[in-house]
Image (cartoon, rainbow, N blue to C red; front, side, top):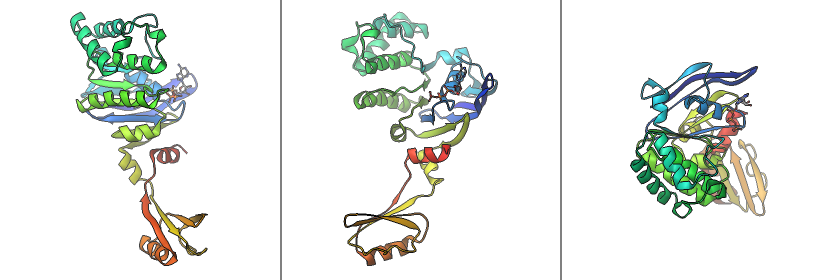
Length: 291
Ligand SMILES: Nc1ncnc2c1ncn2[C@@H]1O[C@H](COP(=O)(O)OP(=O)(O)OP(=O)(O)O)[C@@H](O)[C@H]1O
C-alpha cells in the first residue's frame, strides 16, 4: 500500500499543504483532484522526493519512501522532463538505464513500449519535433520503462485528444491490473470518474473528501427526476422540488420527500416518461466538496 500521511508544507507565508493524506492499494487507480493551487503537485513532489515536507510521512509497503523506493517508482512530473533534442527510442532507453536496467533490458522494454504506445514510426524523431500528444506518450514511456512498482503522474491527460486519452488510459489500466498502484492528478473529472477506483479531493491544502466514487456519492443526497408529458400546471404543487416546463414536458427535480407519493401524483398528472434517481456526478460532488 502507498500511504501519504498528514503532509504539511509551507512556502514562506503560504500554507500549501495543511494535512494531506490518503492511501492507494496495489492495483488501485486513484484520481487526485482539486482546484488550481490546491496542493496536488506539491503532494506528488514530496512523495517523489523533489520537495521536502515540513512534516508528515510517505510510505510504500509499510516502509518510509526513500531514494531506493523512488528508483522503483514511475513519475510524470508536471513540468515534464524530456530532453528535447534526444531521439525518442534513445531517450526511453536512457531513462531505463538511469533506473537500473541493463542496456539490453532497456532496449527490450523500449521496443515494447514504442509498440504499445504507437510510437514505433517516431522512434528516430527528436522529442521537439513531436506533437504534444506524442510527447506525452514518450513521457509516459519514460515513466514506465523500468516496470515501476508505483506510478505517480501529474496531469498525464492534460491537452490530449480523446484518442490519445484512450491510449494512455489503456496503458495505465494494464499496469493497474498488474498490481501497480496508480495516482494521477487531473482536472478532467469525467475521465477520473470513468477510470478511477478511488478519488481524493484536495482543497486549499486539505483533504476534503476521499473514497470510491460510490462512497462519495452515498454521502451526497440523490435527486429524483420525473418527466411527465401533457400534465396540468400545478400538478406538483407542494412536492419537495422544482418543475421546469419545456414544450409539453414537465420535468420535476425533487430532493427528499416520499417517492411513492411523487410517482402517484405524476401518474395522475399525465404520461410519465421517466422516473428515476439521479446520482451526482463527480463534478457535482467536487463542487460541493470545495464550496
Ligand atoms: N516553489 C513554490 N514556491 C512558492 N509557492 C509555491 C511553490 N510551489 C507551489 N506553491 C504554492 O503552493 C500551492 C499549491 O500548489 P500546487 O502546485 O501544489 O497546486 P496544484 O493543486 O498542483 O495546482 P494546479 O492544478 O494549478 O497544478 C499554491 O498556492 C502554489 O502557489
